[in-house]
Amino acid sequence: MDITEVLKELCSAAGVSGAENKACVVALKHLRKFADNATMDKFGNVTAFIGDRSNGKKTLMLEAHIDEIGFIVSYIDDKGFIKVGECGGTDRRLYAAQTVTVHGECPVRGVIATLPPHVNSDTKKAMKAEDIVIDTGYTKEALGKLVSLGDRVTIDSRFVTLKGTRVSGRATDDRSGVAAVLYALSLLQGKETDYNIAVLFASQEETGSRGAKIGAFNLDADFCLATDVSFAYTPGCKKEKCGEMGKGAMIGVSPVLDREVTEKLKKIAAEKEIPVQFEIMGGETGTDADEISTAKNGVRTGLLSIPQKYMHTPVEVVDTGDIKAVGELMAQFAMGGAL
Image (cartoon, rainbow, N blue to C red; front, side, top):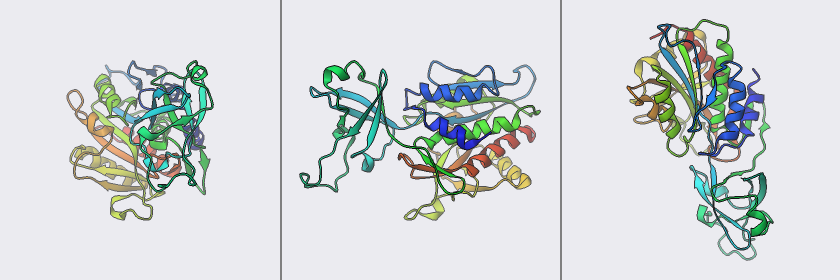
């Protein structure tokens, strides 16, 4: 599996929280290579099951979220300018003068309007979401045939390869996790596993992990390996609170995560020489793992994170080597003897 190409395809598909369909279609195409029963549920989650519920094996769920941050159309004024609200934690500093795509009846290109410095006395002030005005060039009447209230908006971004195995683009949070799960499945294909395998690409993580809560309940797994991105070190950050890009998967250690699962991940990484680092948290993880662990009767959950720079911006950066390490660790866990 070419991780870079799969990730590029995933990140190129729009999937703002609550409107993940286009991203789900791409994820389904790849997931069906490993599970014919892969489907999208009524909540927008992509799910699959590999195995047999009657074979006596416990079920291990591999999870990542499919949605991305963005905006939602809230108003169109008499001149055709679009107002929006936030979907997830966007970075206010980046709003002004961006090109955007409004995902209506067809993609509509626009720009976020900004006053030039010649007539703006306060150029240092960060724009608030309610101050955003999108100019598409359309009149209100013409725009009304293409765009409806509630349509999603994404900031435009080009997926680019950087030096070595690093890539940059929009929505690598958490399409890189989706790619890691798909890579794990490619490694497991045709091999005997110690678990049945459930897959969940969860919707609406950026607006409260709602998809993970529903998907985990429905899939009824015994164990879960959730994956998301976490902070990679950049100047100005505290090294002790960050991972390092290219140093492998970040194994989460937290009171809300299952201790045996975490210890097994550490042991497998050492035995199989899979590069890992550790992310220590004193409480909740801020990922879908929090909701999954308390779903239904409880799911014994571990967390694997991918170091990422510039989170929640159009130029998020990840290292495909770290994605590979996460996928390898998931696959080895599935074959490493059931807890």
